[in-house]
Length: 235
Image (cartoon, rainbow, N blue to C red; front, side, top):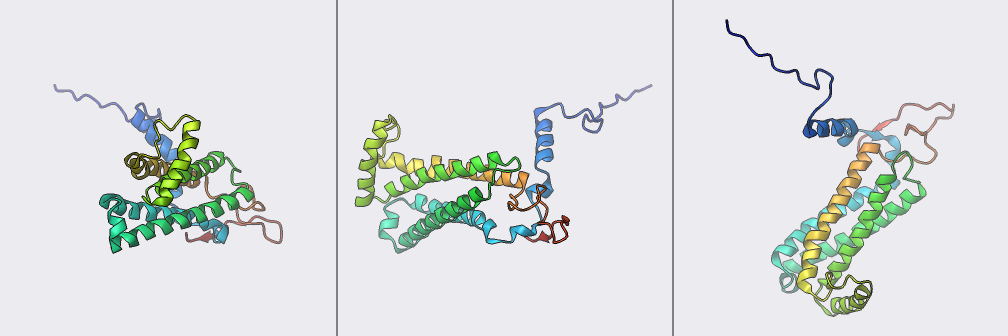
């Protein structure tokens, strides 16, 4: 008589929990980032104000920066100095950076006065500040890649300061090739990673409500003092 060996039950189905790091990772992500939070359809109605626009404007500016930067890096510095298309692409890159920093600074100021670290959002605030600081270093290396008198002046003024703090040996601003790789590879990866983490944290905890909103992120109380359900608004 033949016997069939019964397969061991799925630990998640049996209620015992995952037993591998992949299963535990899946459980962690589903618990902290369920699909309705990671890709929400609706947002509370207070999101439909200008205070919540500038963060997305900074992300849109970053997309244009990366796109134009890829084209510039593939063709090299000589191309965007002698080609009309190169001049245009370089201008798109420059103005994307200008708008990116404008939107980011306004976004940071608004969130500071809104006390955006409320409700367990401290790490969200910290990642936003780190993204701003890393972006400043990235923009500094971009100025050095102009390969004109301004970039030479900036480089040799900064060289003394960097040497004074002891990092000039491995961050040589007078070495165009080294700065080029910092600007198109290491620093953009850092900015992209921190911004992605920041967006994920926003999705996980939700956008910070106005200061006079309920602690549950519900819509503002009506005239009777009751707290109605948040009115959905398309993002």
